[in-house]
Amino acid sequence: MPAGEPSAVPSDGLTTRQRRLRPALIVNTGDGKGKTTAAMGLALRGWHQGWSIGVFQFIKSGKWASGERLALEALGAEHERSGAGGEVAWFTSGAGRSWVRKPDDRSEQAEAARQSWAEVSARLAAERHQLYVLDEFTYPLVWGWLDVAEVVATLRDRPGTQHVVITGRNAPAELCEIATTVTEMGKRKHPFDAGQKGQAGIEW
Amino acid sequence: MPAGEPSAVPSDGLTTRQRRLRPALIVNTGDGKGKTTAAMGLALRGWHQGWSIGVFQFIKSGKWASGERLALEALGAEHERSGAGGEVAWFTSGAGRSWVRKPDDRSEQAEAARQSWAEVSARLAAERHQLYVLDEFTYPLVWGWLDVAEVVATLRDRPGTQHVVITGRNAPAELCEIATTVTEMGKRKHPFDAGQKGQAGIEW
Image 1 (cartoon, helix red, strand yellow):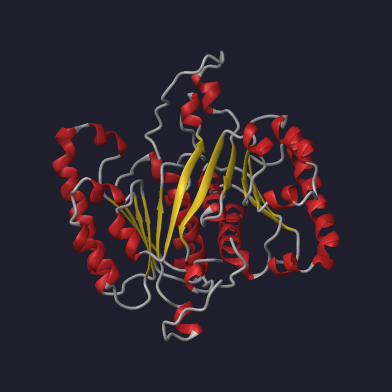
Image 2 (image 1 turned 180 degrees about the horizontal axis):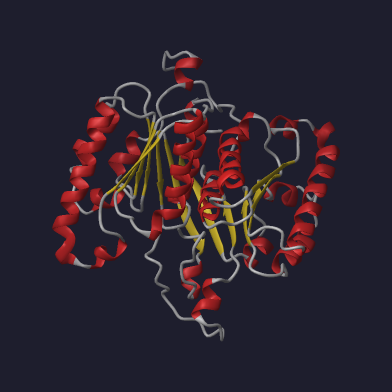
């Protein structure tokens, strides 16, 4: 991470303070590891800032998410008890990863994804949270379950200074276009390629 | 993240269970964002597993680290109080980012990095933690402050099932060689390029 010094001063008419508080739209894409964990690390930083954090998991469920979910929920409980940090609200849709390989379940899953997105849209309109983690959100876009143009317009025109982090492979170009940060997590070496199975604490 | 199914079964003579518990050495490198946040996200997962977590920051200090540090320390305190999750031990060396531009301070910083590495080595030998986050550890390697061959041998030969995550740009090839996972966080779009300054909750 660079030392925070911009390499250029833009001619956008904004003050440094306005620019500093500009809402971030961060996309973590690519076929490497770290997309979701980096988003959860940002949630840690946001929690410390006292932000209200909304996490929306569009695919994962069950054990795949339990590590970061229960840890962040412990931080949310700490906020309830002592006032430290911010609140944490967690939403899941979908029945886990295995359904991706079961076409029969897809229409149900598509409907669940649409309901989750409707919830995100409503909360954005209400400025309900300061940080939204839309985990594995690229898949319902790529699979045509959500209208990319509508999603992009809603995110682009969101009111206030709400930050959004989106994870998943194959982020659509239209989404990257409106993002403030796009990181490609590229796989240089992956344990599954060598026959390693997922393990607790590392993959979930 | 794939669904946890290996694409090949290796002929290494290990059982699935042995392979599942094989110690991970994860390297998050590249010039994009997400290297440190992904490591901190892994620490969240490890905390939930009840692991003892040691975080060693080789460069950052001050506000740059405070978000994830204080959030993880809150989880460590939760462990002390209720027994949930695991313990969190945090170590910093170095005086912050600005010193990188001040060559006069470098010998002092190099010495601090060597002391931190000695601490990591001793803890690895004692199997003190289950997850080590060596944040921005590539820099003392790249700058010649630490002997890469000695570091690689110590990590490669560490006893037990201790997991290690290393972050920083330009990870040396010898380090990637012994890693189980290497992710290149590539910059496709970065707000600092557009004149954006770092902001609380996002960069720290």
